[in-house]
Every structure is written in C-alpha cells, then in structure tokens.
Length: 571
Image (tube, rainbow, N blue to C red; front, side):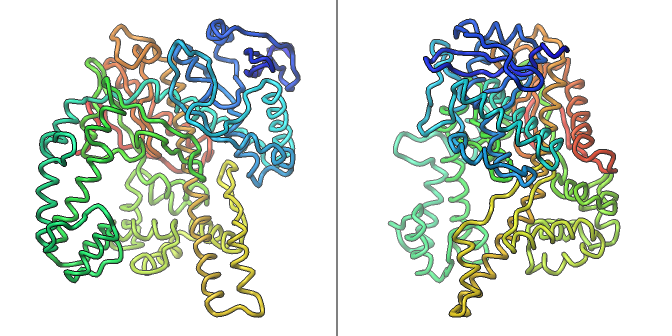
C-alpha cells in the first residue's frame, strides 16, 4: 500500500445534509471528499473492499442500513465509543481536547435496522440527543482521538481496545440483524407446562392463580396484594414473617407455610412478565429473537441490553433456541473466565497451574488450598468482590497464602479505590473518578466537627468504592478478552464459503455461519450442519488467539464448554 492509498474512510453528512466520504491517507491527512447518493453508498462500501476501515460517529446509526442493503463492513472505528474510552483512560496523558467536546458523550442510536424505504434516514430514533453525524465534526473528533493516542503512555494497548470495542459495535448490529433462532412452538409448550394454558386478557395463568390462592390462604387474607412489596411485607409481618424485603434469599430463611407457594408465585410471575407470551410476540416473532445490544453499556465495558432482555435469558427457555432445519448451534462458554483473567493479569503462575486443563475451582482443591469445590468458589468470588465476612472472610486468607500475586493485584486495586484513586483494565479502560458526593463524605470525616457517624459513613463508602475498583479491573479485562474472542470468531466465520442450504437469518447471514448470541462469557454460532465442526474449531481457535493477543505467552488456558446441538438447552 502506497502513501497515496487511503487507509481510513470517514463517513458523515455535509452541512446541507448529503452523505460524504472523506478518504484519509495513513498519516490521517485528508486525501479527497466524495459526495455520495444514499442509494450508491452500499455499492461504494462494497467496492472499497475488506481492507478499508470506516470511521463514523456511531455504528448503531450507520451500519444497520448498510447491513439491510446486504453490505458487510469488515472493520470500523466507532467515534462515540472510542471517545468514551479515551476521555476517561489514565493512559491518555492529555485528554483536555476530548473533554472540551461533550457532544461526543451522547447515547447510542437505536440499533434496530430501519425499513428499506427509509434507508439512510439517520434521524435519531428513540429520543435523546445523539452524537454528531456531520463530516467535519467526525474528522475533527477523529483527529483529536489520534492525537491523544500519540501521546498516550501505552498507545498499543489502547489501539487494541478501540479496535475491539469498535468490532463489538459491528457485531452487536449483526447479532440483531441475524437474530437468534427461536421456536415459538417450543416456547409456548414450556409456558403451558409451567404456567398453564394462555389465559384470556385480564387474567393470570391457572398455575399462578392457584398459587395466589394458596399464598392468600396462608396469610389469612383473601384480598392480600402480592405484587406490591410494601403491602406484601405488611401481610407477612402480620403472620410472623418479619422479613425486610421480598427477596427469595431472605424469605427462604423463614419456616412458614406461606414461603414455598410465595416463592413459586414470584418465580412464575417473573417468567410471565419477562418472557411470557407478550414477550414472545414482541421480541421473538417470525422465528428469531432480536434483542437490542448496547456495547460498552456497563461502566466496566460489559455489554448491556436496551430491549428484549438478551442478558437475562432464563435457563428453562433455552430449549426454544433451536437451529433452522439443516443447521446447527455451536454453544460455547468459558469456564471461570474472570478468575483466569485475574491469574493472567497478575502473572500468577500458581493460580494458572491450578486452572490448566481443568476446572479452576477443582484445581484449587487439588492443590490443598481449601477442602471443597464450593469453598474454592466462595473464596475466589470473595477475593474478586471484596467479601470480608462469613465463609468468604474465613476462606480468602488461604488464597492469599497460595496465590499472593493474584491477591495482591486485587487488594491493591481496592486500596486505590478506597483512597479515591482510579484503576484501569489491562487494555486501558479506566474506572470513573469518585463523585463529588463521595469526596464530600470523605472530607467531612476529617473535619474538626466530624462525628462518629460521619467517620463510620466515610469508612463504609470507602470500602464500597474499594470493592468496586477491586472487581472493575477483573470484570473489565474479562470483557476485553471476550471482545477479542468475538472479533476473532467473526473473522474466521467470514472466511467460510456460503452454502446452498438457506436459513432464515436474512439476506446477509442466511447462507453462512454467523454469530447469533453473546452473553458475557458465552457465544452461540448458527452454522450449516456441514460446517458445524469447522465452526466449532473456529470458536476454540479464536479463544486461544484472544488469550495470546492480550496475555502473550503467559501459560494459561481458557477452556470452553462447547457443544454442537440442534437447541441450546442445558442438561
């Protein structure tokens, strides 16, 4: 590639509202601008080829109409997501220019692809101010981001994070477009089995109504309100159940005839409201579940969901996730992702040895650190989340003796947080600074007129922030590994030949293996049956490639629980 060949193409709108492509050379200088008709843009993007990296304000605004037109973008740079990372990263030594442009802190656009007749009508959907889509604004923001990277203390890691975050944004749009294969008949059968036949409007399913009668009988109140927490608590108190909340963890501690039917009632009501018949009609129509993913929606970099509840898919409904005829699902999740990431970040070879080729918790038991797998799990989670009482408080000291590097890493992160400092993930995403209210509480405890209550409140808020920063670095780095895994899987599947057996995943993904679902440490690939084994191998190879990309030659594995099946039900 010569210096005259464009490396980047920035997509935006001119002041008069027309689409414009600005091609840049490798050093970021503008080579040329081209006005583009909306109808011609898909062909131009296709002709540019897979080596072109597209720069745009927000993937959720620009990519859906391209995908709807049958165009797949290989790589992009999402200015909105990158701005958020760079503006807050401690690796960026000069973020002043980024902070002076808060317009780039806007929310993501609605990720739902527009209809064909409104192709490239990029007005904000769903309300709220979005980031700019003008070509001049995009070019200026891209220049600010490049400048901030040039002076960063570790630009290589930040570039990798921005590439992974932008790849995730592309994948989120593709997941929505392809959808997760969903069998409405299986879903309905599960609901009928658990709840009873679908009731007429205004009535609850028979099983829930039966449980409601049992609960009210046990309360001795035929008119008791079961769906208002204050009213339900008052009814419980009248029969001697002195709970302070209606959480199942607290209610389960009481021995009273009302508890069992009440817990079952609450469980089935959650299923009905979150994934019942109305949900199926809205989110899983026409054989596809199409949630709206929000990359970077959690402060640690984890994804969120703004519709459909993709991140809360209940276990009992997973058999409804069913491949198209002639296709298969490759379902893969990582065993103990966050503890393994902790071992790699800390370069703790002892913890890595416990995890190699086996269940990490079982490995800790085998090394004699604790007595049972459950104790190992409690200890590790306690270490990452800062638990200091109960079983966690009793077991964590054993981890400190066995795995001092890993424990020092999270303990140091907690101390930094308690002191009001900022911690940063492996690739450079930084935790937000403490709020002004938090600082007021801390400074108030040191004032001459401070009371014991002020000091107690300050210690509590400091410990809370320490628990947050302790977990931030681990959860955030695990999210980075998962993004690298996703991006590598996507690239490997893109190399597969299309097949004649057409699925129902739309014009782009109906003839090729593709990602169909993502949940923190789990992915589902939908693949033609003839390519299922190759797709499974791609998923495994991508997991190892992500390990090497982030952690180099550190001797650690990320074993997958992987299966090829017609549905996603778990045994």
